[in-house]
Length: 604
Image (cartoon, rainbow, N blue to C red; front, side, top):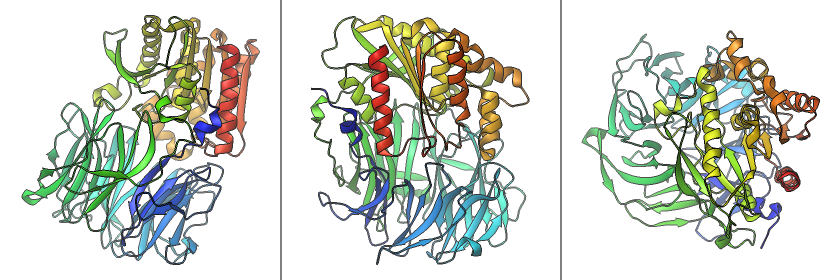
């Protein structure tokens, strides 16, 4: 039975759980068409929608002391979030910021719940500063406690009184961690010059800091930083990271710590999550592990309830839409507490992926997920090669409604984690850096060679398909290996690295140059830009973009479409004036994928 795309896109995505001090569960859900804040008190109870907007809400953060929360919302998916305080007692909302030309990155509540901290580029579009303001104040009253030095800067956590922990990314794989005395405006670096990521930072019960990091390691582990002797007024610190849980062959990639010393974490094992829980012992330097739920698929968003007796997380798998689960600490039981409907589509029709590995040009094995439709016929099955963005990202076995839609229509889907992907160690993420950029495109070519050996595959009906950096990979694949493709779908992709770096948000430029190469080395940027080889494109091309995209400017879509048309190749474009880097409106998503399905029906 075939179902239209609107049915698949009507399957709710629920994520970002958190608890209020009173134990109320908050989460984001797109039930109404865009992500909004919802709440529920018990499993099976019908949830209540709290925010009433058509614009997307991307952040929800409950106070530590009151029944209230902060949420962040942008306009037209432009990522310029403004912050609002929502009082759960009476449903009133109070704007905390009103500077629509600026991005506001939520940070944390103060321990006493009286103040909030965040970063914003209000002073200079290319610089993020740190602000602190009272919970009842407007941004006119906000105190600028630290002027940034250029680029992205975030508040990771508010430790105590006036001490905040800040993160300053130098690249996707390298972040500096700072301890800031907000009252004195002084900060000291906790990290060193070694390339290190800190994707999770949590305050510990004794004033120390727990981090997920890959400092000195190929894979990420759970570490502890003793802050007892750290003084923000000093120029440097001797803070060291003590290993609490080793990563081993796989990354630790999730963390929640409760003030009682209870702790939960996840490991990413070939894309699948292992969930662990325990208690900090030996002064916080080790963990006595306890029972935890055994889960299939992917777990994200770990968070403890106020008393530490419960913790929540988002769970999804190939055949199970996103939902929030709650577990009792110390038990193997967990319960999905948010509705899990599938818009009338039988869950039995959803197809699970097989984890495969294929050999590439340098004898390396590339991990991938391979999903066949039911009753795939030999040599007659078309394939979508779905390439993730990032590039420091990993495709994992989560639920994609559009993937299930295409499988339902008879397509197989291959999702490769080519070199440069995360999840397989630090060294693997660097295999596509700068002048090695096209090696990852060769991995896509080798993926198609692997497909040619699969008995079900029709080698003449293979589609290149990808979003953001994955869109660049699509354009690179159809210019470098034009004979392999029947059609291509490019979502918000980079066509020209020179114009991309010139026009992307000022605050992101240095961060992206560390990955792709600098504007000072235009020869490299020209060499890896698909726009300069567009005359080689032979297949039909579909290009989607949002006019409000602050990351990859819409001019990237416009110039590749114009250039390809000049070569006499048909190009279809779909540009939304009210969207940005992501299509967030359900109505627009339905229009988008109806158009893509029609495009593929005609050319594949």
